[in-house]
Structures are given as structure tokens and as C-alpha cells.
Length: 215
Image (cartoon, rainbow, N blue to C red; front, side, top):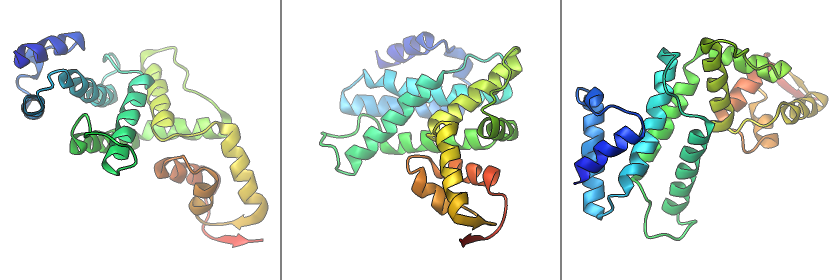
């Protein structure tokens, strides 16, 4: 019954079950999910697992295809919410009978998401253009639509604030320090919710030197 339910869910997410029959990673994933759902007697978890898994699969697919069925930034937000909820439960900050999916599974998805967003050279170029001039890739063709999607994912996942907030932080640092090295520690103080990966990119764009000296 659970296998039939899994097949139906693959169809819902526009995935062909036969396509993945030769994918050993997907087979292993399915076995783990089935065991988790059976042991907890919670078949509805299948939809949660598949939704999260296919979000990352779609992101990876976009790196090599321009015509793939990709997720939107709302899917990235859903994964971030799932990770935040699970972290709150496991740390004891949120009372719960337990996480709704395996912590290791969620952590691996989060790591994979970061790897995808950090591996594209073109994305780094588009990010620099966005930070310096608020310019988005021209999305008149499918290749550039892909660039726009990747950039929106990056901004959402790494909690990059608006360019006006970033510029204000940069100007505040430059007004008090002579920068010739990494301004990462100062940027982290002024942009506390922004991920360290994005902080490092902001530092490379606005502070491309080597020593920070207080004025």
C-alpha cells in the first residue's frame, strides 16, 4: 500500500517512477523513507519526504538543463522552514514529541542545497552585479531565466537583505575603518541573519583588500 502511495506521489510531483528505477540513490532514499514511515505508522510523511527530496533534485537538474521542471523560491522557503523547525525541536527550544522527518535527512538536504548554490561561477557573477547595481539577469531566454532563478534561490536561502541595507552596512564600516582585508567579522555584526557564505561574497565585492585598521 505504501509503495502504491509512493508511486502516486511521484506522479503528483511530475516525476516518472520508471525514470528513477535505475537510480541507486533514489532507490536507497525510497527504502529509508518507507522504513521511517512504516516504523512510525505515518504514511502521510511520504509526501513530506518526496516534496523535500524533489526540491533539491530540481535544483541540481537546473544546473545542467535549461528546460527542467524547477521548483520556485517558495520551495526553498519550505525547506528552510523545515530545517529551522527541526533544529528548534532537536535543541529543545520547541516542545514536540519529535521531528517530523529525520534530522540527518534534513541536514543532508541543507548541505546539498548550499553546495548547489555555491558551485556556479555564473551565479557568482550575477550576484556581484546584483550587489553593485541591483541588476538581475535579463530573462528573455531560457538560459537567462535559469540565471534569474538561481539568483533568487541564493538570495532566499542565504537570507541576503536588500541592496540598500547592504550598502548602508558597507558605508558604515568604511566610515570607521580603513579596509584592506576581510570585513567579514564586521559584516556579520551588521547583517546577523545573513549566512556566512553570502557575507563572504559581500566582503569580496566591497572589500577586495587585505588589512582592516580602525581610523
